[in-house]
Image 1 (cartoon, rainbow, N blue to C red):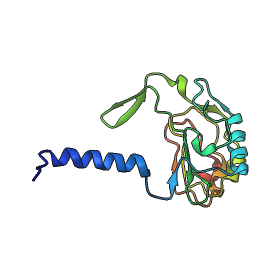
Image 2 (cartoon, helix red, strand yellow):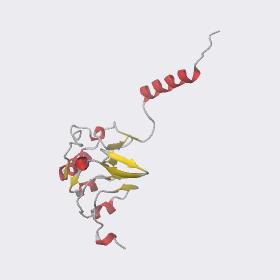
Image 3 (cartoon, rainbow, N blue to C red):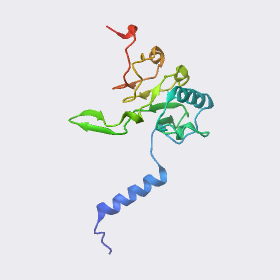
Image 4 (cartoon, helix red, strand yellow):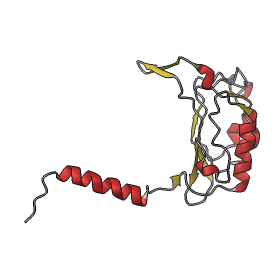
Length: 163
């Protein structure tokens, strides 16, 4: 009878190969086909940004679900997550985030084409530089939005959002 001396190691490799073969479970992933209307909305959104370091250079081609920062529902193909937070040059000291170089920050205009992403439930625009522009009021019309991160993006709160 053969003994397996390193069961944890063998189990690790079996799990790794299973993951590589079958992928992940769940509703969200980045390899479904995006809807043409949502691709157009994302390209319009991109056109409003100034992207000094070409962070959005992957935003081309047919399948927007493969673009950096975009996650689509595997079941429907709808865009459900936009993660455009700036993590480049990030320095964290005692849970405070600082940046050595803000040249990677997106800036410009957040276009209302985002309204054509009806299933968007996660939006992260943190640590970008929107130069004291107002938070777009249409963001409040994104009915499915559950996570919104605008930390340190230099927005001004519109008068309708103040106490």
